[in-house]
Length: 188
Image 1 (cartoon, rainbow, N blue to C red):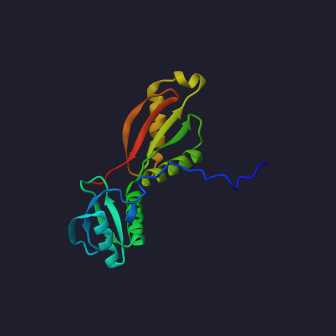
Image 2: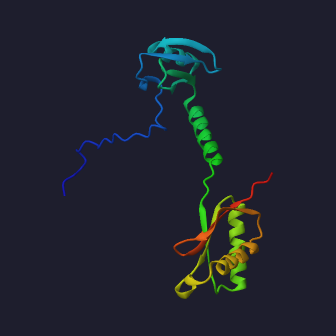
Image 3: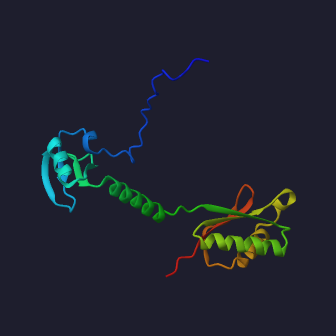
């Protein structure tokens, strides 16, 4: 097998734009609007003058708004800038809450204890803010039973759920049998 020691390293052009921040000499603009470490505005300066200004403070010149005309750069410590960006991303992630639609399946012959366990699990999901789809699964001859009887059976299960909820979708026929979707009841 030939040695790879003399081979040039592979270069990857994939760059994460959200994490790739240009600092100091990596800034490509000829002029930048410069903000000082305390937020003061130094105006539009040539790139070399802006870098010299940052070196006077012993800090870095960081491009914070590359799409502006001219781009905006701030004089600050790069580590502090990274920390602030990471903190912002964490706050955004914490505020975004995705709701899922969880599913509970009940059959005509499901026992009382099993129905209570499923109702408790549905209540737990509702309290977490998720939607819950409840299916009354029908097979064979059960598919042809009277709708009012099947609806009453599904409503009996819904009464077992110990959480406040509202019907997001009314009880209706579905490919599996009967189905409805529950949401957490909003407090007025």
